Length: 462
Image (cartoon, rainbow, N blue to C red; front, top):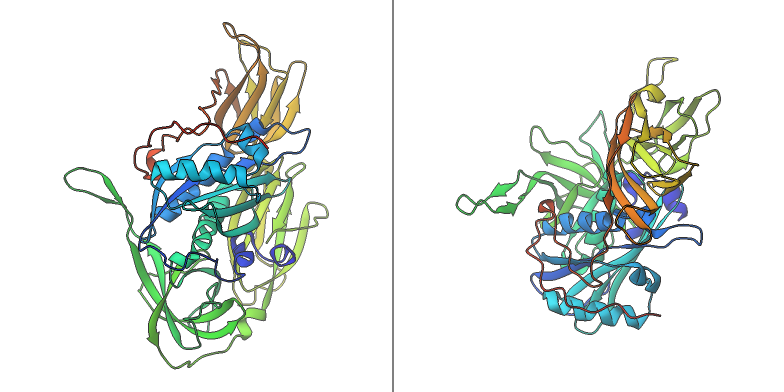
């Protein structure tokens, strides 16, 4: 945990580098995998429905990343309900494992990824494991805190899924950080130092997704090709990490954290093992006038005085993030070793007029309680929510009494807030839970095959 507090949200792969995940001795050439929607672990005063959609979003992000791997086939996703959340799929209990084995077999999967997430004020703690369908045995487990920003969360949980299945990926890893060097080609920090194939002089490919390919006859999407955009040579190995100097690259190649890399069988003598650039620093100014907003850099809180702060950052990539009431906006910055103009350090600014909007309720029924990205708001009645970060949010309205409905229902709506203007909520969709064990109909972006039958029974109670 300490290492994560010292590193960028985009560098959240560091706790995943504890070594290869134990797996079956004979890995299949193409592993059929199912992914169970992650379930929330909430405290006593929280409502699980307040995080509706976040568990499915984690599953979708994992499916998208694994779908691009040549040795993994994502055959479907499984939905969980409140009972599954109580059973805690990330625990070591056998009951939920037996249920997962039954459902995984129906989908034709050989392994199932499942887990939980615990929303915190400034982050989300994710725990995941992969279970073998053959015998319910846990093949590996990982845990890490990630940003609440959806884009960064997608990147990190996609990488988490790949690390869970590391034994099936022979030498596939990620760029953790990039150090631009004005005197030479960039230096990269990679997460493949613990791989037995890696030694000083090993050549690695830096990979990037190409454009979507569509079948010319069936018009069916065939996925995105993984293309090499450059090569780097390992110059120093440090535990489960290694530093690699870019050796050859395409003319327009750019390097950034979470790019994939692949170990090759090639080797070349090391000609430049200078790592001094890693320890160089540069001052960065921070400004924020957002009420109640918290500024984070690399997961650490920045203390502002009179809305301003000054921090020293090492060269490389960093994530600067503003967190407000469970929502987040973030940007990556790259600190170069060139000295800034005297008295004018580079500035990162978060301005309220550019970032904040408002949510107004104009429903035909009374609203007393609402959850926006898990944050609770109340009123008698609740007419609006102010100072909301611009972007897409999950709005949950529990305890609604709608005409024609017996008892109360919960409504869930995805809303988009624009800065400087109100977003009016005049209609909502009633949340209807699927049958327990039902296979979700995947969104087109998942690229998953049609779901199988959904007769799987309910997860067992603890």
